[in-house]
Image (cartoon, rainbow, N blue to C red; front, top):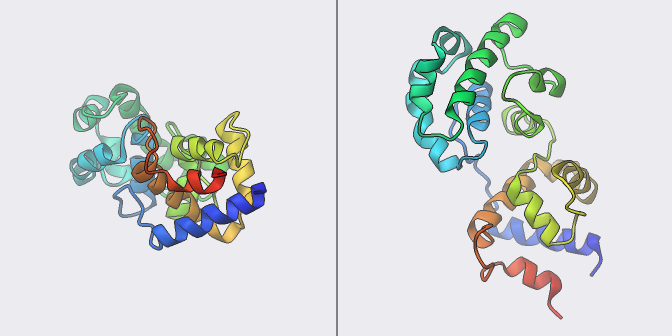
Length: 206
């Protein structure tokens, strides 16, 4: 089976499994999405969704977040890993949104990635899920599975993203990256033995 054939099989099976792809992180607008994604680094989406209701109740806009002190933000997100750094980033992110963008989340990678706590993956999620621009954010599930499926060299997430964008058409990127994430969580968790990972078996069965 060629790489192109493997990519087509993956897309076909994932479309059957996950015809609908709700965004895993609870949010109401691009700003709350960006905050949620920034909080999700080295933390599960489930944990983020448990914390953000209280956070957004008092700091659901850049204006309100910027008024809080770092220790107040940290108290609201203390159950999440790296809470010290994330609290500092969220406050400064809000301040810069007000200073540079009138409190509105920008719609370019360059401007997004200039904000504290916003790397390329977070910017890609905001661009795709917040604004609908074609993007293929690569998280650990996607990087691991695409390597496992021999659809990328697996050297780093940058290369994996490039390979994904070559293999699949732009119009499916926003949905497909979520489908792979859902599949990884349900059928091929990083710490599991992969017994349920039927796509890998289909790809490489003799």
